[in-house]
Amino acid sequence: MFPLYDENPTRITPFITYGLIGMNVLLFLHEVSLSETQLEQFLQLYAVVPRQLTVSFAGASVNQSVPEWATLFTSQFLHGGWWHLISNMVFLWVFGNNIEDRLGHFKYLIFYLSCGALAALCQWLVGVNSTIPSLGASGAISGILGAYIIRFPRTGVVSLVFLGFFITTIRVPAMILIGLFIVQNVISGLVSLQPAAMSVETGGVAYWAHIGGFVFGLILGPLLGLFKQDYE
Image (cartoon, rainbow, N blue to C red; front, side, top):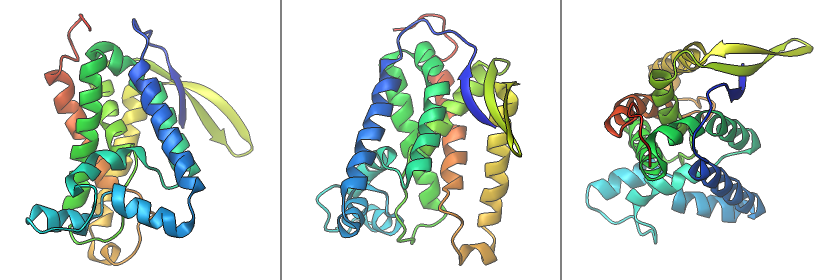
């Protein structure tokens, strides 16, 4: 199932969500304009490289012009391919507007960036010595899903369903759609921790960033006023 739009109206124009989408698209267009060598250097500088983050936390220099802690934020605007970008931006478009509506623009931006950074730290914890760059908006968007599932659990989400050669749309409660997403990530995340899986690639999916972002979304959303009726 792939979400198209939700059925909950907003009261304000979600220009922070629009801005985040725009920044992600522009930076990805910059990525695809780079040569292979330039792209590798770019990701080493702005994506989270767990081993470098570990070294920097230990107080040693990693000889980078960008502080390694800052990559917890810069990495949120980078993507590894067209499908990675498109799927993330669709979820941000569908679910982000209502969370921005309830939190207000400023708190929503703080919420988004905080969930993304904390999600990246969760992924770092399961591979502190990895040299593979970690990047993408998935952790921050998972935080939005965590907030959404507790604020709008019964809201209908119109989704695409692929049935072989047939494509149709169905209305799915947010709790079911997002619940399926997080259950799949928990199962895949646990499998990725098995010794046999630790020595092979896991499809480039940061499952623990998704899980961590979702959990922090559940926590930070209410703390920032998710259930208040007023907004900024």
